[in-house]
Structures are given as C-alpha cells and as structure tokens.
Image 1 (cartoon, rainbow over the protein chains, first blue to last red):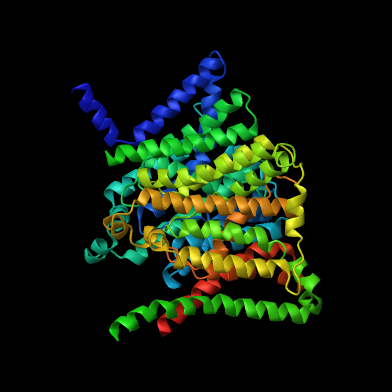
Image 2 (image 1 turned 90 degrees about the vertical axis):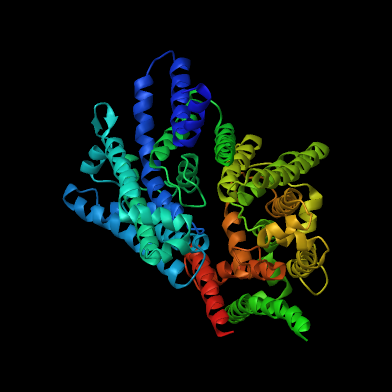
Length: 317
Length: 315
C-alpha cells in the first residue's frame, strides 16, 4: 500500500481523526507537565467524556435519520431528570431504584412529547424539541426551589468507581458504544435508521416503518439524556440548574466532529468517543496553560468550527 | 386571469400567516388591559414595552439567518459581546469601539460565506461561534460594569408625542424590514438562498455573496440590538444577551416564518416580539411565578404552530 493510498483510506474512516487529535492533545499535555500525572489526565478525560458520549449516542441516532431530525431537548431532559431523580431518592440508598426509574421515566416522557409534536403536530424537529426543552427547563427551575438535589451515596460511589484505572462508567459506555455500532451495522432497526437517513422515501417504499423507527430513536435519545442527567448529578455531587449548560453544543459537536453526517444516513459511534475525548482534552490543555475563562471559550469555539470545516471538506473531496 | 390568480395567492397566504400572531397579540393585550388598566397609558406602555427595542433587532437578525434556511444560535452571546464592547469603550475610545463593531459585522458576513463555501451545518457553526462571542465578551468585561454613552441612553428614552417610542419604532422597523426582505430588488435573491438556491445560482447570482449579505445583515441588526440594550441597562454584562437567542427564534417562528424553505415575515416577526414580551408581563400580572416564563414561551410556540397546521388543512 502506497502512503497516498493509506492516507486516502484513512480519510474514508473519518472517525480515526478524532482519536488522532485526542492522542496528540494528550501527548501535548503530558509533555508540558513533564509526564507527571499523564495517566490521571487520561482517566479524568474518560470520566468526563463519558457524559458527552451518553447523550452523543442518542443525538447521533436521531441525526442519522436525516430530514432535519435533531434533538435539542437533551440539556433540559438532563437537568429535569437530575433534579427529579435526586428529589425522589432523597439521598437514601434504599430509594435508589426509584430514582433510576424516575430518570428513565422523565426521558421516556420527554421522548413521547417530542414524537407527538414532530409526527403528530408536524412541527419541525428543531422547534419541537426546543419548545419541549423550554417547558422542561422551567419545570426544573420551579422544582429546584426547596428540593434536595443530593445524590444517594451508592450512586456517587458507582459513578466514580474505577476498573483497571479507568472509570467504570467509561468502560460500561465503551461496551454500549460497541453494541450500538453492531446494532447499526447488523440489525434491521440499525439498517432502517441509516436507510431512512439516506432517503426517507426509498426506505418507505422498501417497507420500513418510518414513523416507528423515528419514534424509537427520539425515545432512545431522551432516555439516554435522562440517564446522563442522573449520572452527571451523582458524579458532580448533586443536580444544579446549569449542570447541562454546555451540552447543547457538546451533544451536537461530538456527533458531527466524530464523522456522523448531519444530513443523515451515515453514523459513526467510535467517532463520538474520539470527539468527546478530544473536546475534553482541549479544555484540559487550556486549563494547564492557565488561560482565562474567556480565552478558553474563544479557543473552544474556534477549534470546533475549524475541525468541522476540515472534516466536512475531506468528505467533499 | 390565471396569472392574476397566481400573483394573488402568495399575498393571501402571507396575510393568513399573520392572522394567528395578530390574534394572539390582541387577546394578550386585551387581557392585560383588563387585569391592569394602567398599562394602556403612555407611561405604562413605555415601561412594559421598553425591552421591545433590542428584541426587535435581535429578531430581525435571526430572521435574516432563517431566511437562508439556517438558524443562528449565536446571536444572543453576540449581542452580549456588543453590549460589553459598547459599555467598555464607547465613552472613552469611541473610534476604536466603532472599528470593533464594524469588524463584528464583517465577521458575521464572513461566517455566512464560510458556511456557504464549506456547506457546513449552520446550527453547529453558530453554536461554536456563540462560544467565541461569549469568550470575547468575558475577555472585554470579566465582571459586569462600564457605562453607556449619553446619546444612547437618551435615544432609548425618547418620548415622541402621543405614541410611545417602542410602538413608533415597531412600525418603522416593520416597514423597513418588509421593504428589505419583500420589496427591494435584491430581496428575491436573498429569499432565494433559503428556498431555491439552485435557481438563484442558475440565474447568475452568487450564493456566497447572498448568504454573506444575509449574515452581514444579521450582524448589523445584532449590533443595533446590542447598542439599544446598552442604552437601556446602562452597563455591560457578558451574559445579558443569552436569552435573546431563543427569544428571537421564538419571535420569528411565532411571527409566521417557516423553518425550512426561507419563508419569513418581517412584519410577523415584529408582532412575534410583542407576543413574546407581553407573555412574560401577562404572567406576572396573573401572579404566576417567573419560573414558568420559559414554559409559556415553549407552549406559545407549540400553540401557534399547531394552529397554523389546522388553518392550513382547512384551506
């Protein structure tokens, strides 16, 4: 294989670039800290990236069905699920199961609302999920007054547990990511999602139930967001109103930077992990350099736009 | 006859499109007047509606981008940045400040060219840009402070005879917007970017120029919005604009815009601004805690779009 050919086949596998970027950043951080704490940095990166990955998988499935499908309610679902599950659990281990059910229930409810608005009321997905998100966010605001937002001790332990030096949650969602890749590649549901994204009409004519598949991806997305809300609230010691503030951008960024086509029909699960690690390590590196929060925002925004421009142009080439 | 009919049809759908927001606005205004008769006075209206000034221009900015079938999730932080720039430098170094603002408008136009050239999804690009604007605002002004130049504070507190400033401004801005997006000779090309890009290109117009023009307009309207906001609050705050992103999207959509296809209505958007603004005030008149403000915003969007669907099925 000539170097040119190797490069071209690398370009076809766009998700690899996100890992190369993440690895380069990690090396840069390790070098600038003279190797001190490089392992710890990676472990923390995996810990934070997990949350981007959880919501990213759901967002990826929704975006993959094309036709403007997108889920902008993710951050609001996370916050509401975080608050309600903490409220139900009352920081008691015995009530933990109830809390988990609540988080998934909030997700399922949000998913159903999104589906009804999109398929029933024919509201464009972007506006429908945004409007549903408004309503959930204000429910969180109203609920946050005088409620406990502390997690159950068992859940805190679980969300920060480690396996072979990696966070347990990260390992779990590496497995989940592998499963989702398999589902996309090998199952009727997975192939249907991608087929609808490539051409909704062709998928319909091929006998795929478009409404059912679309409804399922929205439901999965919201339920994963609910789960992410519960876990993030436990991981960070409680729910807060701005706990998911960055997730509107991050959920989309990890999906698109990871190589999933925003027009639908092409998904990359591995890329989500790569992009999530890359984005977290970017922030970590800026912290190492001790830049102000303003500079950090500017550079994060510039990097997202630049990487997006580069990756989309390789697609066109 | 057929040609005349073909010409008449878009007009009538345009009117139908405006009926719903006008209806909602009338119901809101009447209930407000019943609940709190004092708002119908000159001073009352001036107070209740004062923040319509920046929101009108924020919504025109959003409308310019939605006309391209795009969405701008960065306009709020952009307005915040303009607010910080103005509050920090307009009094002490007006020339430098104006140069920065011109740069801002050019940056916005550049964003449009960039999205067109690279065929990028506007939602991710503008979300990324929102981080840049917020970051720049925080660099200019890490903590709230600064002051508005006197001419700006005076401008937003003008008292025209008989009719309060926000309403005079609304009429002028709506008329200007209508001319710009519906009547001016270039407006066909501008609206074509979102609805018939291939035809626009085939007719020999540059899509890069047209999309840059739309984004450049968004930048200019965003700057005006930021200036007016500075005049009203008399200081700078990096986070002050955040709410304007979603408020402006809501106002434009409630005002009759279709999300896909570049169908926009500047007059509708201005009505949408008042709907969004009055919804908040009405809520407080009804003693509903302000926590539910966002809910009302979401519910209004759903209601208006639902009503539009029903109306369309009838016709």
